[in-house]
Amino acid sequence: MSTIIFKVNQAFGPVVEGQVLISQEGFSPRYDLDRWTGFITKPGHKLEGENIKDKICFFPTAKGGIAAGWAFFDIQHKGIAPKALIFGVTNPVMVQGAVLANIAITQGWSHHPSDVFQNGDWVRVDPGKRTIELIKRAD
Amino acid sequence: MQAGSMTLTSEEQAMLRGERGEAVKKAIEFQIEVGKFFNAKRFVPITNAHMMGDIEVMGDGGLGFLKDACEMKTRCSIPITTNARCMDFRYVEKLGQDAGEAVKEKQIITYLKQMNVIPTDTCINYQTVYQPTLGEHIAWGDTGTVIYANSVFGARSNFESGPAALSAAITGRTPEYGFHLNECRRGTFVVKLEAEPEDLADWGAIAKLVGESHQNYYAVPVFAGVHRKPSPDELKHLGSALASYGSMGMFHMVGVTPEAPSLAAALGGRTPDGEMLVTQAMVEQVYRSYDLKDRNGNLVVFSGPQLSLFEMKNLSERFKGRKVHPGTQVFVTTYRGVRSSAEGIGYLKDLEDAGVEVLEGVCFYILQNLSQMRIRNGWVNMVSNSAKIVNIIGAHRFNTILRRTQDCVDIACSGTIA
Image (tube, rainbow over all chains, first blue to last red; front, top):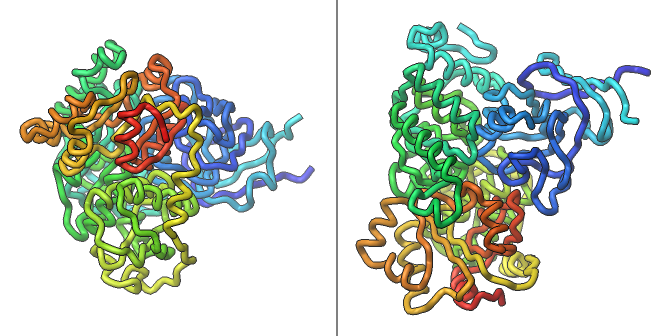
């Protein structure tokens, strides 16, 4: 199998591996997330009922919101943070929050993630190389 | 010296080497990482910062962060104020908030004061505390404050989260990217307003239509055709809802905002990506779009952003001589100084006589323990004239409904959503 590489434009953070979770809707930890359990709880959110803990989360956009600056640090402290946040377009607050919490974060993507990955795929995010590599397909 | 994309001055290099203390070193290291992500070329000096910092969003991790910062003798070098917090301490017991968390919230305030932060506890600092001037570089959060500063004052700020605004106040600067740069401030698309908004909620409804369909921090709508000059409170509701639904940090309004004397000036030579028409029918459709569930109106909220003195006056006149329906709870949140003025003038008495609770220093959607409060009080629907709060409170699983101000008052007094 040839290596499947997904390119991003901007990136920060450590090299991480985890399961893919793709959202067709934007994200805010204030608007959408139960910050005590890691579940997406906003009624009607495309990922309602999913848990972001340890996931490589793909979101097309950032919603809101100033809360992420502290909230990512908080959920990291609680042990329910995602491994990486992969945004189509993000905003400064998401980046500030991810930097403070040392969570990998990227912006801009070479393909729509649904064209390349599916939920449950195991991938490696390398912010230094600005790549996301498929390691193993979901069963 | 280069740090990634950023060129540092000799003073910034000294900060980075730790010559201005460990706290300054940590702050500028954090800022450089953020600046590198956005390909900032340099720092820009700032004159004012405004930060979010409360236990509901910070948690024990954030509290520990501030404790460590205090132990490092961290001290802000420029004026910095705080955003709305999650507790009005007079209401902790009545609202069933956690006594233990209240102790932590007070500890946060103590830490921030030690660091030279002014605990104003307001999300309408631009109406009550500090009004920046055209071209002034600042570092503000929450998002409603940022979009107002950029759009209405012509000042320059990105969304700066709590730790980012605090870092900016410590170093006296912020990475120069986004809305600090001319190219990001030009309008990207045109919104032709055929609607004639009259109520605060109408402006929020317009922002919902524009923001939801253009969700992008770098999208800058240019409103054209406004039928009259909106008031500061109307611009407040438009801006805070654009920031909420669209994650937008700036808008122009032709003939109203300082960088939009004309449509051409607002676009700054850019060909707009498109034009959107907003009609009165579209605004009315927003109001019709909400699921009313069992039509129970036992929670009505005027908050997000906090109310100005003009809003307090207006609301007190609408409630004067009326009574909130038994079983319905009505909350207003405002800035401490506004509440105090409203008390002195008599607006507060009219509201309280009607059964309205007026909280100070908080915003409803960030109240500590809100999910539990919702369950305990049997709240399903939340009715508000604020499009922002209707959008932002979702994680607490409210069914939210936007209504015009008078409709909200009537629902509060009847207990039923018509």
